[in-house]
Image (cartoon, helix red, strand yellow):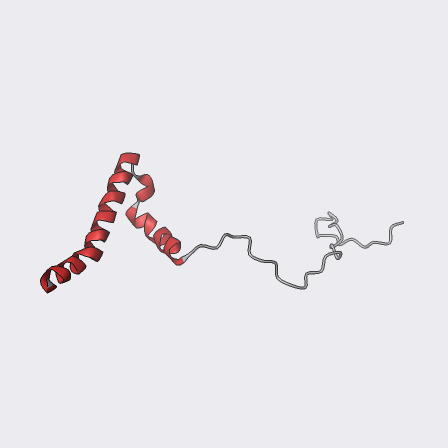
Length: 86
């Protein structure tokens, strides 16, 4: 006879004995890839922008338009201040 004990469920199917061969002394590192703050922000806004549902040509247009707006927002005031100072 076997000396190992098995736990029996109420419907009489025996469970295998618990595995006691592994002992974890530390928490394993996360296997999920860590992302930066900018990536997380874009992922949060993605459903509202619906960038993934655009056609390839529309994606190019939206990207170029966004870069143009960003460039004007950053360099426009700098250009105006330089123009006013000269």
